[in-house]
Length: 224
Image 1 (cartoon, rainbow, N blue to C red):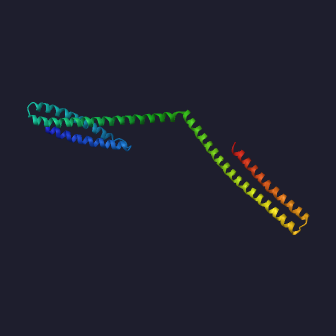
Image 2: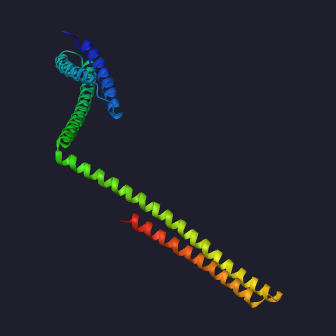
Image 3: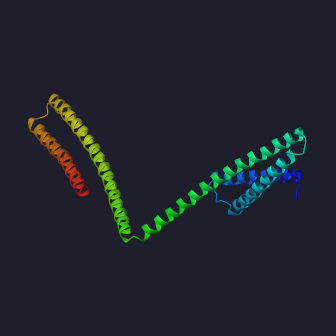
C-alpha cells in the first residue's frame, strides 16, 4: 500500500495534469475549435483516479492522527484538505465543461435535423423557389425604376436647356428687330424674319413636347 507521502505526490501531479488539460479544452472551446474527445476522456479518467487517491489520503490521515504527534497531524490535515478542495474545484470545472459540450452537441444535432427536414419538405422548397422568383422580380423593378429616374433627370435637363435656348432666342429676336428698325429695313423683310422666328419657336416647343411625350411613354412602359 502506498504511503501518505506517495499519495500526496501523485495527487499533486494529477491535479497539475487535469488543470492543464482542462485549460486546453476551454481554449479550444473559446476559439470555436472542435473538442478533442480523446483529451476530454483522459481528463475524466484522471479525475476519477484523483478522487480515489484523495479518499485514500483522507483515510490514512485519520488513521495517522490517532498515533502521530499533533504538529504532524495538523500539517497533513492542511495538505489533505487542500488537495480535496482543489479536486472538488477541478471536478466542478470539468462538469461545467461537459455540460456546455453536451448542450453544444445537442444544438448542433437539432440544427442538422431541422435542415434535413426542411430540405426534404417539398412545400418548403417550393416556397423558397417562389421567394427567389419574387426577389428577382423586385430587383428587376428596382432596376427599371432606376432607369426611369435617370431618363427623367435627362429629360428635365433637356427641357431646361430648351427653355434657356428659347429665352435666348427671344432676346436675340428683340435685339435684331431693334437693330434692323434703326437701319431702316423694310417692314416686309421684318415680317419674313418674324415668320422665321415663329417657325423656329414652333420647332423648339415641338421638340420640348416630343421629349415629354417620349419620357411619358417610357415611364408608362417600365411602371407596368
